[in-house]
Image (cartoon, rainbow, N blue to C red; front, side):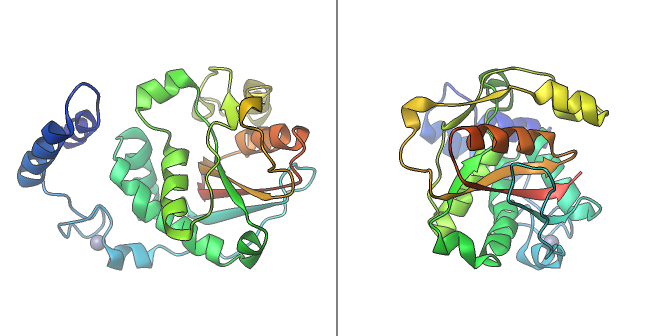
Length: 235
Ligand SMILES: [Zn+2]
Protein backbone atom coordinates (compact mmCIF):
# COMPACT_ATOMS: atom_id res chain seq x y z
CA UNK A 1 0.00 0.00 0.00
CA UNK A 2 2.74 2.36 1.04
CA UNK A 3 4.78 1.81 -2.08
CA UNK A 4 1.72 2.06 -4.33
CA UNK A 5 0.84 5.43 -2.87
CA UNK A 6 4.45 6.57 -3.15
CA UNK A 7 4.45 5.68 -6.80
CA UNK A 8 1.26 7.57 -7.48
CA UNK A 9 2.86 10.57 -5.87
CA UNK A 10 5.28 10.72 -8.77
CA UNK A 11 2.60 10.19 -11.41
CA UNK A 12 1.24 12.58 -13.98
CA UNK A 13 -1.71 14.92 -14.02
CA UNK A 14 -1.38 16.79 -10.73
CA UNK A 15 0.35 20.01 -9.77
CA UNK A 16 3.51 20.33 -7.69
CA UNK A 17 1.39 21.69 -4.84
CA UNK A 18 -0.78 18.56 -4.96
CA UNK A 19 2.35 16.40 -4.78
CA UNK A 20 3.72 18.34 -1.81
CA UNK A 21 0.41 18.02 0.02
CA UNK A 22 0.15 14.31 -0.79
CA UNK A 23 3.76 13.86 0.31
CA UNK A 24 3.04 15.56 3.60
CA UNK A 25 -0.01 13.35 4.24
CA UNK A 26 1.96 10.22 3.28
CA UNK A 27 4.84 11.16 5.59
CA UNK A 28 2.33 11.58 8.40
CA UNK A 29 0.49 8.31 7.79
CA UNK A 30 3.44 6.21 6.67
CA UNK A 31 6.66 7.73 7.95
CA UNK A 32 9.77 6.80 5.98
CA UNK A 33 11.80 4.24 7.88
CA UNK A 34 15.25 2.75 7.40
CA UNK A 35 14.89 -0.61 5.62
CA UNK A 36 17.35 -2.12 8.05
CA UNK A 37 16.94 -0.60 11.54
CA UNK A 38 13.50 1.08 11.13
CA UNK A 39 14.80 4.45 12.27
CA UNK A 40 12.47 7.13 10.93
CA UNK A 41 13.49 9.73 8.37
CA UNK A 42 15.39 7.92 5.60
CA UNK A 43 15.01 4.74 3.57
CA UNK A 44 18.57 3.81 4.52
CA UNK A 45 19.98 5.68 7.52
CA UNK A 46 23.62 6.77 7.30
CA UNK A 47 24.60 4.26 9.98
CA UNK A 48 23.19 1.29 8.04
CA UNK A 49 24.46 2.65 4.72
CA UNK A 50 27.95 2.69 6.20
CA UNK A 51 27.60 -0.99 7.12
CA UNK A 52 27.12 -2.14 3.51
CA UNK A 53 30.48 -3.63 2.65
CA UNK A 54 32.00 -2.38 -0.56
CA UNK A 55 33.79 -4.53 -3.06
CA UNK A 56 37.18 -2.98 -3.74
CA UNK A 57 38.15 -5.22 -6.65
CA UNK A 58 38.31 -4.09 -10.24
CA UNK A 59 37.31 -6.67 -12.83
CA UNK A 60 38.86 -6.79 -16.27
CA UNK A 61 36.47 -8.92 -18.36
CA UNK A 62 38.14 -10.99 -21.09
CA UNK A 63 37.09 -10.62 -24.75
CA UNK A 64 34.90 -7.69 -23.81
CA UNK A 65 34.23 -4.19 -25.12
CA UNK A 66 34.51 -3.04 -21.49
CA UNK A 67 37.91 -1.87 -20.30
CA UNK A 68 36.94 -2.62 -16.73
CA UNK A 69 34.03 -3.38 -14.47
CA UNK A 70 33.28 -2.02 -11.00
CA UNK A 71 30.75 -3.76 -8.77
CA UNK A 72 29.77 -1.80 -5.68
CA UNK A 73 28.69 -4.60 -3.35
CA UNK A 74 27.30 -8.07 -3.03
CA UNK A 75 23.75 -9.13 -3.76
CA UNK A 76 24.18 -11.42 -0.75
CA UNK A 77 24.17 -8.31 1.44
CA UNK A 78 20.51 -8.37 2.56
CA UNK A 79 20.19 -4.58 2.90
CA UNK A 80 21.72 -3.85 -0.51
CA UNK A 81 19.53 -6.51 -2.10
CA UNK A 82 16.36 -5.20 -0.49
CA UNK A 83 17.21 -1.60 -1.36
CA UNK A 84 17.79 -2.45 -5.03
CA UNK A 85 14.59 -4.48 -5.14
CA UNK A 86 12.50 -1.73 -3.57
CA UNK A 87 14.09 0.85 -5.86
CA UNK A 88 13.41 -1.12 -9.05
CA UNK A 89 10.22 -2.99 -8.39
CA UNK A 90 8.47 -0.99 -5.67
CA UNK A 91 9.38 2.24 -7.46
CA UNK A 92 10.90 4.00 -4.45
CA UNK A 93 12.81 6.66 -6.35
CA UNK A 94 14.21 8.17 -3.14
CA UNK A 95 16.54 5.18 -2.87
CA UNK A 96 18.52 6.55 -5.84
CA UNK A 97 20.38 8.90 -3.50
CA UNK A 98 21.82 6.38 -1.00
CA UNK A 99 22.46 3.80 -3.73
CA UNK A 100 24.26 6.37 -5.88
CA UNK A 101 26.21 7.33 -2.74
CA UNK A 102 27.75 3.85 -2.79
CA UNK A 103 28.63 4.26 -6.48
CA UNK A 104 30.24 7.62 -5.73
CA UNK A 105 32.59 5.96 -3.22
CA UNK A 106 33.58 3.50 -5.91
CA UNK A 107 34.21 6.25 -8.50
CA UNK A 108 36.32 8.16 -5.96
CA UNK A 109 38.51 5.05 -5.62
CA UNK A 110 39.39 5.38 -9.33
CA UNK A 111 41.24 8.69 -9.89
CA UNK A 112 41.56 8.12 -13.66
CA UNK A 113 37.89 8.97 -14.15
CA UNK A 114 38.40 12.54 -12.97
CA UNK A 115 41.79 12.84 -14.64
CA UNK A 116 40.29 11.90 -18.01
CA UNK A 117 37.05 13.89 -17.82
CA UNK A 118 34.82 10.82 -17.71
CA UNK A 119 31.20 10.95 -18.79
CA UNK A 120 28.24 9.07 -17.32
CA UNK A 121 25.97 7.09 -19.62
CA UNK A 122 22.97 5.22 -18.16
CA UNK A 123 21.86 1.90 -19.62
CA UNK A 124 18.70 3.06 -21.41
CA UNK A 125 15.23 1.62 -21.10
CA UNK A 126 12.87 1.16 -24.00
CA UNK A 127 10.17 3.85 -23.97
CA UNK A 128 7.49 1.25 -23.16
CA UNK A 129 9.37 0.06 -20.07
CA UNK A 130 10.09 3.66 -19.11
CA UNK A 131 6.37 4.39 -19.24
CA UNK A 132 5.66 1.32 -17.08
CA UNK A 133 8.24 2.10 -14.40
CA UNK A 134 7.92 5.88 -14.62
CA UNK A 135 11.68 6.40 -14.40
CA UNK A 136 14.93 4.93 -15.63
CA UNK A 137 16.64 3.58 -12.52
CA UNK A 138 20.11 3.88 -14.09
CA UNK A 139 19.50 7.45 -15.17
CA UNK A 140 18.46 8.53 -11.65
CA UNK A 141 21.66 7.00 -10.28
CA UNK A 142 23.62 9.01 -12.90
CA UNK A 143 21.81 12.20 -11.91
CA UNK A 144 22.75 11.71 -8.24
CA UNK A 145 26.40 11.02 -9.17
CA UNK A 146 26.39 14.08 -11.42
CA UNK A 147 25.02 16.22 -8.57
CA UNK A 148 27.80 15.15 -6.18
CA UNK A 149 30.82 14.74 -8.44
CA UNK A 150 29.96 17.03 -11.32
CA UNK A 151 30.71 14.31 -13.87
CA UNK A 152 28.62 15.15 -16.95
CA UNK A 153 25.70 12.89 -17.76
CA UNK A 154 25.10 12.12 -21.42
CA UNK A 155 21.50 11.16 -21.74
CA UNK A 156 19.68 9.96 -24.84
CA UNK A 157 23.02 9.23 -26.49
CA UNK A 158 22.69 5.49 -26.20
CA UNK A 159 19.12 4.51 -27.01
CA UNK A 160 17.19 1.25 -26.74
CA UNK A 161 15.35 0.55 -29.95
CA UNK A 162 14.03 -2.94 -29.20
CA UNK A 163 11.41 -3.73 -26.57
CA UNK A 164 12.63 -7.19 -25.69
CA UNK A 165 11.85 -9.56 -22.87
CA UNK A 166 13.32 -8.40 -19.53
CA UNK A 167 16.69 -10.11 -19.06
CA UNK A 168 15.70 -11.07 -15.51
CA UNK A 169 13.08 -13.43 -16.97
CA UNK A 170 15.70 -15.40 -18.95
CA UNK A 171 17.91 -17.78 -17.03
CA UNK A 172 20.11 -19.12 -19.82
CA UNK A 173 23.27 -17.08 -20.58
CA UNK A 174 23.25 -17.72 -24.33
CA UNK A 175 19.55 -16.86 -24.60
CA UNK A 176 20.22 -13.61 -22.72
CA UNK A 177 22.92 -12.70 -25.24
CA UNK A 178 20.55 -13.41 -28.14
CA UNK A 179 17.71 -11.50 -26.50
CA UNK A 180 19.79 -8.35 -26.00
CA UNK A 181 21.59 -8.45 -29.37
CA UNK A 182 21.20 -5.33 -31.55
CA UNK A 183 19.00 -3.72 -28.90
CA UNK A 184 20.91 -0.44 -28.64
CA UNK A 185 21.79 2.32 -31.05
CA UNK A 186 23.62 5.60 -30.89
CA UNK A 187 21.48 8.68 -31.24
CA UNK A 188 23.51 10.46 -33.88
CA UNK A 189 21.80 13.77 -33.17
CA UNK A 190 23.61 13.82 -29.83
CA UNK A 191 26.98 12.70 -31.09
CA UNK A 192 29.40 15.42 -30.12
CA UNK A 193 33.08 15.17 -29.29
CA UNK A 194 32.96 12.27 -26.77
CA UNK A 195 35.40 10.08 -28.60
CA UNK A 196 38.45 10.63 -26.42
CA UNK A 197 36.61 10.52 -23.11
CA UNK A 198 36.15 7.63 -20.72
CA UNK A 199 32.56 6.47 -20.49
CA UNK A 200 31.18 5.16 -17.20
CA UNK A 201 28.23 3.01 -18.16
CA UNK A 202 25.82 2.78 -15.23
CA UNK A 203 23.39 -0.07 -14.54
CA UNK A 204 21.73 -1.41 -11.41
CA UNK A 205 22.46 -5.14 -11.31
CA UNK A 206 24.77 -7.29 -13.38
CA UNK A 207 23.76 -10.89 -13.95
CA UNK A 208 25.47 -12.40 -16.98
CA UNK A 209 26.80 -9.03 -18.13
CA UNK A 210 25.08 -9.37 -21.53
CA UNK A 211 23.32 -5.98 -21.33
CA UNK A 212 26.44 -4.02 -20.33
CA UNK A 213 28.45 -5.83 -22.97
CA UNK A 214 25.94 -5.02 -25.71
CA UNK A 215 25.88 -1.35 -24.65
CA UNK A 216 29.69 -1.21 -24.58
CA UNK A 217 29.86 -2.88 -28.01
CA UNK A 218 27.47 -0.28 -29.44
CA UNK A 219 29.50 2.58 -27.95
CA UNK A 220 32.73 1.10 -29.29
CA UNK A 221 31.26 0.81 -32.78
CA UNK A 222 30.44 4.52 -32.57
CA UNK A 223 34.15 5.20 -32.04
CA UNK A 224 34.33 5.60 -28.26
CA UNK A 225 37.66 4.40 -26.96
CA UNK A 226 37.27 3.42 -23.33
CA UNK A 227 34.14 2.17 -21.61
CA UNK A 228 33.87 1.11 -17.98
CA UNK A 229 30.86 -0.56 -16.38
CA UNK A 230 29.65 0.40 -12.90
CA UNK A 231 26.84 -1.55 -11.23
CA UNK A 232 25.44 -1.80 -7.72
CA UNK A 233 25.69 -5.55 -7.40
CA UNK A 234 26.15 -8.78 -9.22
CA UNK A 235 22.90 -10.78 -9.21
ZN1 LIG B 1 19.26 2.14 9.67
